[in-house]
Length: 472
Ligand SMILES: Nc1nc2c(ncn2[C@@H]2O[C@H](COP(=O)(O)OP(=O)(O)OP(=O)(O)O)[C@@H](O)[C@H]2O)c(=O)[nH]1
Ligand SMILES: [Mg+2]
Image 1 (spheres, rainbow, N blue to C red):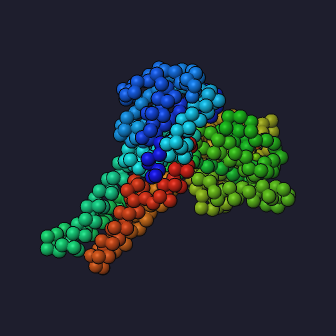
Image 2: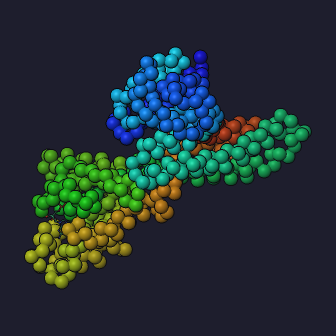
Image 3: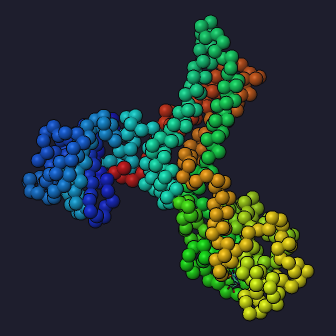
């Protein structure tokens, strides 16, 4: 029995008490099984019509009343006959209904993602859309929801097709010239420039991988800098609650703290870290080692400097972040403003600032690299909105976080192999034979097919659909 001939059943709603619970059946026996539970429904129900009916046990006793929907193959989500019973959301009742459906020998429990997998196998959706279903369910920010919805409506499928069709044509032309040199003569004339264009289109899609990952997983942003710069105060301000301990003793923060926020719909995990300094105590040194580890892993490092930091010092702090992009801000700007009026004003927090404002760099701003870093104050909130905007701009680089085709790591890997094969094809078009060129174009096509699903293995499908929940 091939998997497709089995009828599958699962609860499509979470196994918890709720307003509505849905039992979903798909496959050739779906209607019969569904009617077994809801005998009041006509033998040939109108497809897509909601019947209000009773659900009964094996003896015919009424268990619940709810809606019965029938979707006739192929016009259903899976492409097969589908029946949905919308009952009251009682977990115990739903298990009874499920058990009854499973009494039929033609029925077995659905595997995770199996409904969606059948939709894919029956050509109802391509692989990018099937994955968008899982992305939507897993989405934990507004940007992720919107991007998954775009994927669901075929945004990525569209762009893959725009690449796949001309690639297929090129491959056919080349194979034509190779196999029927007389009939297809000249079809390879533009091959070189066609390959170049296709390669840059593949690279352009690949370039969205970073954004796709940001949307899918959220961005990681760490605050770092010298001890006592005001990182924890700023962290609390950005998070909107007093999460981190704040104190005027340098080295207050040891463990890195994290908090999840959503800015302009984009999920952001924000980290507060142990301040960096030479010769700390043992525990603090462990914290500093963590800071450095974290800095290497985040998408953006926000360097918080005390007012009055010199240009050279600022540059050396920047280097602590290694390859991670850095956004520098001057913290405690309320102090700076006050100190400009009275340098030795001990009545405000200026006394807590480690770098004295009264030394050679008496005007702190002119000592920093130009343009001067934006100024913020975690204490008063000044400049914090502007900082949020700059962080988003640095992460996203313009545009709204939803305008992305959600390129996943899997897509990225397939696109990389597509682009590499096209790179070799480009080379071959200049120095090698038509066979080699056509071979590389064929490989590019195969790699691209993994994205849409025109060329995928069972193993890949297994891995993909394991991400899904049962009943999806
Ligand atoms: N005036 C003023 N004082 C601030 C500001 N931010 C922090 N402070 C003070 O500076 C001291 C250190 O603040 P923290 O937020 O703990 O600084 P930190 O960078 O997290 O310090 P470590 O965890 O020790 O590295 C505290 O006394 C804060 O009240 C600010 O924006 N303005
Ligand atoms: Mg701190």
